[in-house]
Length: 250
Image 1: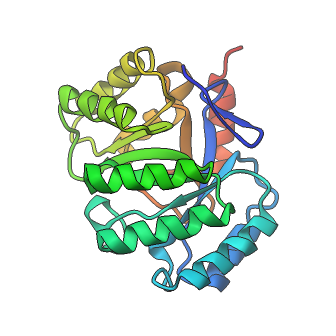
Image 2: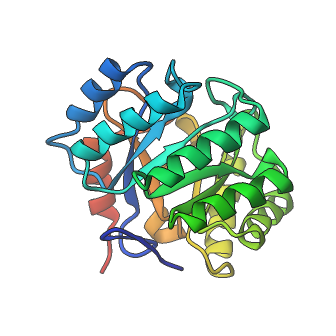
């Protein structure tokens, strides 16, 4: 599996790295949640900015990031998840670009999520902004209704790599056990073909297995919950650590 190193964390080697999402709607909620992580074992955090009620105020977003950087020494992943991909709000392309530009230029974040389906022009622009500021890119695609065909998922991952993603992520909803197995098969196949780390998951209760077997299949990050989940099927971080350790092999 390919490796992407951020701060002291090498994503793509050893056990899947555990990411804890922060999904508060205001500063009070966010800092309360962040401080609750203090005694937990995890590798990176994700700020889901689409839940933040002041997402349209760039100065408040920057102040928020400053506060989080004082709390966390680990990598911070900054994610705006659009409404069309299961998020909490829909920004215009101009608002999206301005937001990502603002936060990347602060150098307070380490990784930024960029949605593949934003369109090539926006994606190219955002990747250039991120890389100019030494921020890694998780290029992502989410389908909360179904699991696309194997060919469709393969083509999306290949396109993510071509466009310049540093980590390639796809999350899908299974409607059958076969959908889960297809996603696992795809992950194993593509992790051997692509030159970037993969992050894949089959969402919901049916897909829970995909969140814990990444070391076997080649999925480099798994998202766990610490009180408040950001997607269906997330496992509590304490349980995730036990499960990953049980499946770990040297």
